[in-house]
Each structure stands twice: as C-alpha cells, then as structure tokens.
Length: 228
Figure 1 (cartoon, one colour):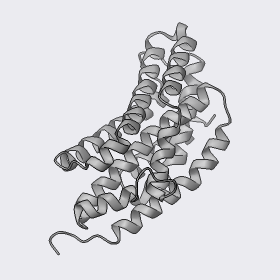
Figure 2 (figure 1 turned 180 degrees about the vertical axis):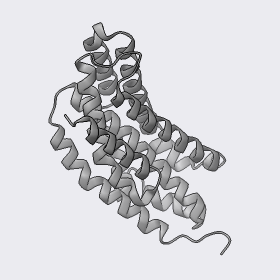
Figure 3 (figure 1 turned 45 degrees about the vertical axis):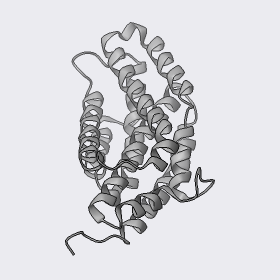
Figure 4 (figure 1 turned 60 degrees about the vertical axis):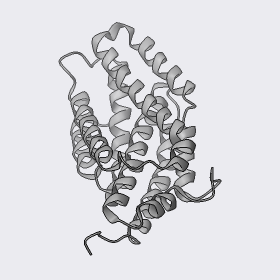
C-alpha cells in the first residue's frame, strides 16, 4: 500500500490530469493506487466520520468527476444519438451504478466500521450483478473498433453527428473518459475488495487507456473550431 505522501502526490496528479483528453491515460495508474489504498484502509477500519486523509483525497477526485460530468451534460443534453443510446445505454448505467455502489460502500464503512466486511460484500455482489467489467470491455471495443456492436466505431458516430465541431467532440471524448474513470475506479475497488491480482488489472488497462487516448486524439485532430 502506498504511503501517505505518495497517495497525496497521486491525488494531485489525478486532479491535474482527469479533465483533459490529452492526459486521460496519465490519470489512471495514480487513480488505481488511491482506490487500492482506500480499500486497504477501509478494511482495517481506519476510516471514520472525521475522514481519513485518503478518503479526503478520493472525495476531492469524486467532486471533480461530478463537475466534469455536469459540464458534459450541459453541452450534450440536447444531442440524442439513438444508435449510441440504444446500444451503449445499459452499459453506461451499469458503470454508473457500480461507481455509486463503491461510493456507498465507502460511506457505509465510515458510518459503521464494525460491519466493514458486510458492506464490502454488498459492493462485491452489486458489481458482479452489473456484469463485472463487461461494460468497460464493451466501451473499449466501441472506441477501438474491435468486435463492434454496430457498424461504426463510437468515436466515428460522434464525429459524424457533430460534423467535426471540436468543442462538441471534446465533450463526447470527455464523456467517454469520464465513464472509463468511473468504471476503472469500480474495477480496481472490486479487485482490491476480492483480493484479486491488482497488478494484472493495472497492466491490462495501462495499455488500453493509452490506446483509448490515442484514438480520441486522432478523432479530435480531424475536428475544427466552429469559429474557424
């Protein structure tokens, strides 16, 4: 488990990187470190209502993620793409529900540390009921264009729909990155709770998030500012 200074450094890095598509991949490894450490601290019953420094660091990240989500919603709320909603909608809901379940677990452990194990088991069951990491795989394939659920990649659908408008496309990319942030936080929490191989998860997704970022930057390079 990372020491307090390293965790604080990780938190600062995540907060700096989490908003920009160009630094999306850089935010994942430190984020994994924070979540893994937070679960470790929770398991030992060291989080209480006063809040552990680790919990405060994570809550700052959670607040930032909520703020990004709200900005994306404001920009994209009038844009409905049936092709995407019908195909990916349920997977987006799974990811959001898993992330909410993790936050709920942390809150419950703070209030009721004597039943930490039960709260962790509840999160574990919800995560598995929501198809574990299937949604992350579906979105990854959708971005990369492998085993697609329909003919075009997710980014191509968004690009065609916004007609190359950079601002809108940036928000679409930010929305996808946001889903990966939530989904990967829940995945790492589940891996830590079940005491599975965290290194394997890190290694698998380190490469994947680089791939995702590259694809998003490729698409953004085809866009233009509306004013130009």
